[in-house]
Image (cartoon, rainbow, N blue to C red; front, side, top):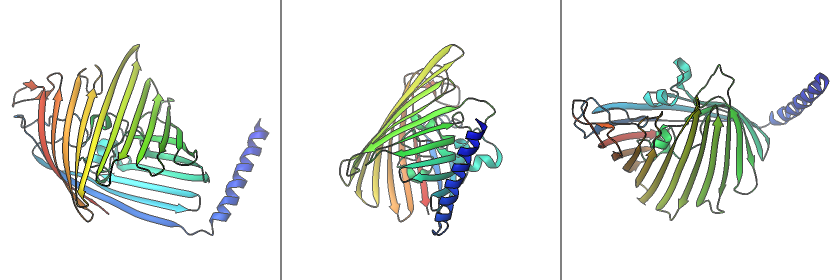
Amino acid sequence: MLRKILTLSTAVCACLSVNAQSDSSKKASTVLSGSIDAYYRYSFSDAPTKTNNFTSFTNSQNSFELGMASFRVDHSLGKVSAVADIGFGRRAQEFSYNDAGSLAAIKQMYLSYAVTDHFKLTMGKWATHIGYELVDAPGNRNYSMSYGFSYGPFFHTGVKADISLGGKTAMMIGVANPTDQSTTTTSAKFILAQFSTASKDDKVKGYLNFQGGNGITQYNMVITGALSDQLGIAYDGSMQCLKSAGQSANWKSHALYFNYDPVSSLGFTLRQDYFDDRSVSPIGIGGKIYATTLSANIKNQNLTIIPEFRMDNSASDVFFKGASSTKTKSTMAFLIAAVYKF
């Protein structure tokens, strides 16, 4: 057995050596990019010290807040590529909430090797494949986040394989640490998977996503469609099941996005968000929440100003009203954000 392992290792090293020699003559490419964002949020409830918010990144009330300063380096040389993506600010801290110190600033850091034109291996930490929204503000048309995004996952740390199945169809399979953990002392691992496809003109795209391990199973579907040059639609749906200590619970989310761009410098997005909570975490209310968010995207070159109105309605009294501990079923908030990418 040892001889077989040594023989296989020698063959792999020889193959990598040959590829490295052939890649050495190719020119390296390095791309720098980044973004910064900030916002102001005001909740119209009469609770001056309560944020009335159960979603990520906008947990403030009547305050100007820093979002995130993000810096990313993409480097490639032949078949090898590397990404270092770091962020500073509350958005980055909440994204890497299990990490501390400098590790919390690393949003993504991974190495990839293209074994063939149809097969690529990646190892490191990367933003999750599950869901429609992204941690980086420039990647979203709404500034506040949906419930489905907020309750995970955020990222994975492990190894994955991207496999092209021909045409517009591909799949990904991987093994990673438990969800949202850059490092772990447990032996538990999660299985990751994605199947993606698209129409020939790329106007319709679909993604079926999965993660499972350590008592958690989650299925997710994302579908996007371009109805015209000005009108687009997207759907993001998740169902997560948890089994722990002989008990089981689940939550599910659905979000619809309607995007309308009358001109290149102005766009509107209406998001209708539904979240059916389980009686244990994440929120622990055991009820349903509906959220309607209307955002405008006012663009001037790389700068986007996002004024946004949002209303959340719950089946039970979960939001605060007044300076006392009185609760209500609904809340409304306004925010305005500035997002710049470079």
